[in-house]
Image (cartoon, helix red, strand yellow):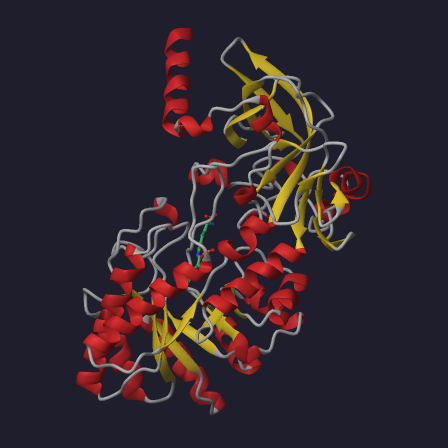
Length: 461
Ligand code: LLP
């Protein structure tokens, strides 16, 4: 039994490649691509961000906490803006949304993609200009569509024939002509986890190009003339590193655009290629800088449009993870350390699958470091687990931590800005952690910690 498990463990290590093996110095190092830009180790060995030590953050705000490097977030917004000077960059709010983040992305010149009434309400409450909001969703309610129209949302991305009929009726009632895009399915197998791939045929999003629904939807909207059809939209999936999928998607979408021109006599002025740009969660990931990505995508669209004798449409993209993911880390406190019979060491922290479901749900990989100090101890292979009543409650599957890691140590997990707080739950009635934004030596809470009163607030009787 033991030999079998040791073999399995060896296999896991092998699959990480030689770069994964660590020395004590590496264990203390902060690999730049994994951490927000202002993260350092101070003279005492503690991690600091935006000039504030994690020790101070923990004293003031407790653990677990999501820590946002505001300068890093703003820099990523600016990088996307300048990488796509002639395109619209919609931040995908599903990655992480709160009023402060809406204001930051708005100040940095981004637009906002929302996919529910709740996200729309947050965007409007924070003062995002409605014309810079795009509304997504495969099953938007009549109330959500009506609210978007009444608020004057800039564009609505249509996802079904039902929705075309509903929105057309609502627009007629109000005498308005909303801008719409048609979300199409391009039939690309994106190389990512099945649950976050969205361009293969067998799934719930969009109108199929291959099956003819996408053309029929465009023809219907143009024929009825109530909605203003601005363009087509394709989102192939998430955490994608290879631009090949975008290339195929752009080609198929533009080909449809040419067919719409030929059959309906209309050249659609816009094209949205969605989001999904990958980030580094471990040293094994090597994402492209936004500038390189933008050059490739823009060139693909220009070449393809030229080949089809189409005017180059105005491009838009919808990055979520690539904007906010690397700008945050989660700070935990270690509670127990268990050496399981020579198999591996389990390091338990005071959060877990309620603040980061991605490891359990998608088998996502993360890394971690002891954040309150450096250590001269040899590395040991550890698994960082949470405090929930579930064996699958894993935060970091495999990480080398110093052998002296102990209760009371602070542990930081980078890359948790996207889809962690936004997918957080109250499983086991664990209150959700706060989000603390740090910039220029100042820390402020932008989402407060949930309390036990919050947990009881919805109980009636
Ligand atoms: N645009 C559309 C239409 C989308 O559906 C999404 C993500 C995005 C943009 C932004 O994708 P991003 O750039 O953030 O990858 N919960 C999963 C990810 C689900 C993504 C859903 N749609 C995760 O934790 O990996």
